[in-house]
Length: 478
Ligand code: ADP
Ligand code: MG
Image 1: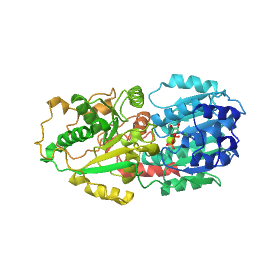
Image 2 (image 1 turned 45 degrees about the vertical axis):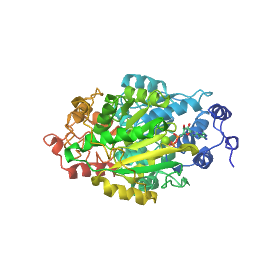
Image 3 (image 1 turned 90 degrees about the vertical axis):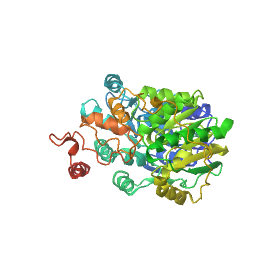
């Protein structure tokens, strides 16, 4: 079995890893670090939680330890799909470079350009960025990518979901073709395959067995639920959620509750709070600082229930939780595996419960298909009770926990009696940057119809026919 000390990493990096308490490299680390240290391109395919961050950060900083940064020309670049993931990579970077003198800058939305500019002006060894924000800096002429020796694309499949592939292609084309590329993804969609064929040169491919199955340390269950009336479905689901939480009693130490839509994340968190549950929401429309604070509280145990959307939770390093509740059945079956993978880690026991309405049955069948398991049907704990009315009317009102006008808009919609609404359906034409920032924080599928970069089409606004956007994108990609 490989040891870290076999891996030819800088001794100062080894020291930092030891202090971080890592005993041995994970399989993706053992596979990716040696070729990366030889300067080769690497294509790493492994699920969330397998230690991908260190598998590119450790060789990267070992290689960078040998040179010096020049003003405005970062020596390496790490691209991440969301602000949280970028911030998390930056944290990891700090841990591993503890004994080295390397500098970094984090370019993400929600942080002022001025601060970021000052750092870049001085010169950084590592630039960690979301694609949109990076291009914004580049377009403002504040940044040169011609000094990039190592480029990392992290969570490429999520980039694809979020529509960042054209941005990634553009960024690739702005860096020297002699650069080394380290590319990581949990899955290999055809579009990802195409990108790697185009931009990676004879990569070493490391694939860690795909986790289509769920850990058997997780006890799974589903409540098949039909509302008494269609317009009561949402509120009855919330009552059911509370009953499920209560039925677990003390066993439920902490939990992540997943909703499919941001608006439901807000409403569910607010409703739980109303009923005395210690809950907070995390999704892409919330202010960066609020999100970070919420996550920190959840990590250190001061917050018991985290209500989240997939994008907000994807890839986040959250320690073992006792329970995962799927308030909604995810529409992509792999998301089920990711969601419930938040519990039952490292051999510990976990519980995952889901609420399935008749409308969800097709998606539910796809999940059972994927995990090759008949998920046990649970008794509805409320079966013999009359549905209690939700306490106060304002529990039903959407939360206004975000300062952003975007989320206010989506939260202002009456939700109870409606079919799912696409949250972006009525986005006003926003300036390019705002649109990108919005993208950084939007769930998959919400934005397939996004407008082209910089493309505020006068006179058509939101009614821009999708074929126009498509041809723009394709032209740019070509
Ligand atoms: P991924 O990017 O694949 O989802 P991360 O890089 O975020 O995974 O790592 C997940 C967790 O595992 C982090 O808490 C990280 O500190 C920890 N970790 C990474 N490598 C090791 C290791 N070799 N030994 C122990 N813990 C590790
Ligand atoms: Mg990761």
